Image 1: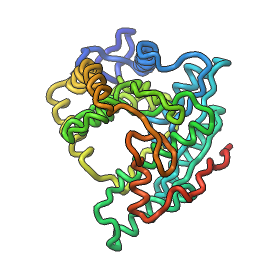
Image 2: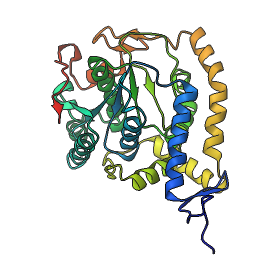
Image 3: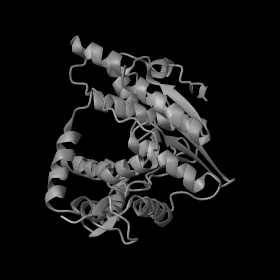
Image 4: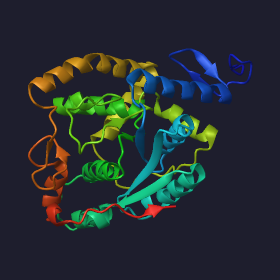
Length: 328
């Protein structure tokens, strides 16, 4: 089989099957960055005088997001970029990825904060899973606990840092999986909150989230990370579980047989999103209130973080929630 050739005449390293176009490393990098810029521009993700907090785990998606935010907006005097990493307390996993985040932020010249589960919530993920192994909270899913508190602490840290936007590394695969999971669960509230720029009712304590990688598949994000040597950790969390991985495998299987399925699936959802949001708004599902326990933004009387901490017998109202020291 003959080698594929890029439009520029160089040897191609990647082909977008649903487009039928092949790219060399240089052209792929340029095309990738153009698509990110288009996502930002078409959705109005970033404006003037912004403080952008990038949720930095050290994985390929968040590392690429930080690299691109710095590359696209790093010279803008009216825009400040800050990285915040959440340390869930997973030995031999998060400690390794945090070393990567420290090196990357130093290389880019970006201020970096680390917020730890243990010091802020009283329990690390390792603590929770050890208790579960001993028969406590048997029905508590590690990914649920982790996801709720990562979002909780990231929003709090971003607010304390004066952020106007929180940038996450969600790619097309992440979004397609989330859409299907919430559809299967019948969760209209979460579906209505999705999209590149969630349309939620205003609450000063909630920092809007943006997803500049949302229109790019995971494999392209990984390739961009390799080409640019973004510097990321490739390890996988030892506690991964839940329906997301079954949905991931299902979508990957369909995509392998019918190229472009994920893209079409997400575009169809985006077309339906205005109707979903209107329905959620009329029923009051999109309204953001404040938790009666901790005062953080939520969609009910008590936030998910407080509900989970109650199961762990931790009174969040008595916890001293402090932003951790700046990492240089």
